[in-house]
Length: 125
Image 1 (tube, rainbow, N blue to C red):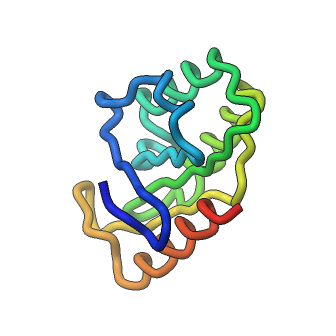
Image 2: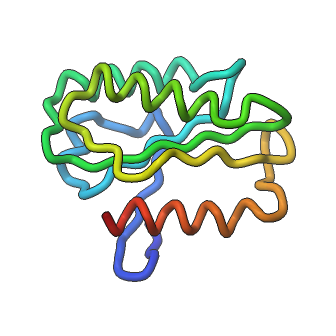
Image 3: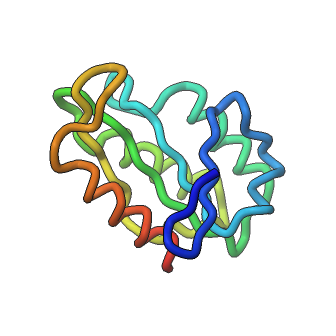
């Protein structure tokens, strides 16, 4: 766990996420590498699980990471899936697509400040 200003931030691998835990958090950020123009199968399944929970009044945002192309495609597909399947979850800021240097990263030059700003916008809505 880490802190951003006055917020506690908890980062989890998809295998660690228990869907009912989302009720314990103020804001839910969902991120995925961009696989062939969209989020991973695991992220799609997680979004579908969230859709069964009734997340009225919850806030969220999405982000993806891309290597060469497909900038924003994963974000758009996650936002569309959430708007269709997770009724009540309010997306509080447009999604962020972050360029990485390869399959395992790192984030490329200039992307970290955008990522920090995205986090702050997501938390302060």
